[in-house]
Image (cartoon, rainbow, N blue to C red; front, side, top):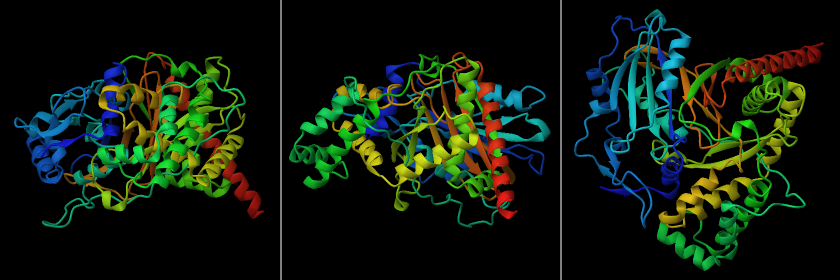
Length: 489
């Protein structure tokens, strides 16, 4: 049965169509131990495994009715009569010695390639040749199919909670998670510039009377705007969000120039025990630690370039999971966006951490930004596909934010695939046009992995950022331990 894409799902197709530098696939690399048998799974065995595990998700056998958006209706998801799961899985081998450098170079090239829109929008690769007989599963899925949390949930269908699960035992379907933390926000300036395309959404939001909003929402199947009082509140929240975020504008940096189509993916692993030790010693949350570690890397990068540090800080767009428990394993996008200004100007890591935690706490207590962002996304969804593309670009413009930072919690137990233990997950966040760097944070089995993706031409000095992130994590840990020692003394 055919199903139309939602306006939010279509946004990620439109971003790619507007600029060839935008790659809107999400993904990651799962690295496994050497199989006890010494034999890696074959493509045929992987195909059978996927057929069994993904059978309840028909979207993985569907393709778009049209490869492009536009016109008067969104493309539909339709059954692909030529679909064979073998067409979407491949095999690759790293050159010797199969170490960190070889895996990084291979994954960077892999994630630089777009998915073929004529086929179901996902693929998976068995990667062999890693040091010590290890192997990996690399995957990418178009963002129009699923969001970050949803993709992690789906990936759990591939995995087992024990090396040799008993026949017929219920499969692992992933942990339940609460929504993301609320963050971001800033006061309206005394003199604000004229609004851009997103500002025009606010004009529409302010001019539509509630009855019209309800009528359009009902036609689009939109939730959350079916009562006049709620519709008016949504419109006001959208206007306020635009005033706060779009009219103020994110600061311009060298990280927000036009980029190319190539990608480089590097990772920084940090023990979860250390992340928790920091937040326990300094207050705040693990998410505050992740944001501060990223801020330290960004500061080091801009300082090394001799670039002035923005007084207000760099603005991060933080996707927020709004899935309910009943939507576990539901495909499509169930996200909103929050904005937080990272205090990059603060000189020492502990000061940056305190400011980050304070801003996070203030925004957690004030849900207006989250409501406003959701309202803007919903109101943009009322526009017909013919003009929605310009609104989609406005929602991901460099005027709104400098970089994306995602944070997805994973299970804190060892999982398995084909009896091999999963040792690490390297996550990828997509880069929109004019955004040269992004960070995906994913925790698994006692380790928090920072996946840092960048345009290698715009950020040839990415190592500087990674070193700054590592130094910040160590400084925060030392500060937390010093404070804990002083408290005990």
